[in-house]
Length: 69
Image (tube, rainbow, N blue to C red; front, top):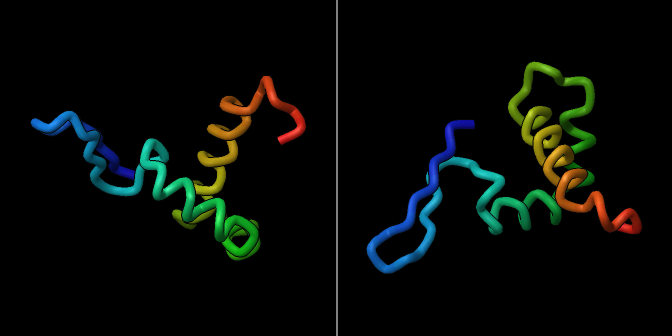
């Protein structure tokens, strides 16, 4: 994923590409998580598998102090 983020002149963060820093992308992944996980299962060469893998690693780090989630 070639993602890039920068702050524009108005102080708004602008994302390009698919970025896990973008809350809209994260929300979309969460809403479709089960299906994305199922469709990418064992497809180690697919982009979706890597997207889900990176998403899960990010979630593990972010929620480390909140094991109930």
